[in-house]
Image (cartoon, rainbow, N blue to C red):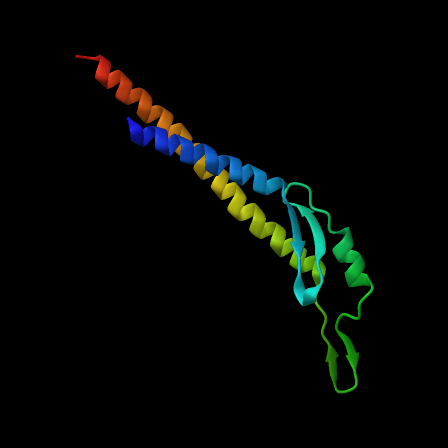
Length: 114
């Protein structure tokens, strides 16, 4: 009877952490510069786009190319990564909690029947 309770608690905690992670702010931090990207639920790429518009990205110069970081793409990648692990964690938590409830109900029903 203790196993379903532990699985239920772990599942609920995992679901809460996954859902909270969706609303936590995401940022990109290359080159000692932090750009806010919004959250996984409500992305805000305006700061990244403003930084990209004001920089010299891939401008050809004599002897090479000036390479600069694409902050918009970094924000998109960080947001995608955040969505992947938080949604996976939340779904796994809900499935574990539901499974624990079903298993606990079956164990109680099995104990009652002679």
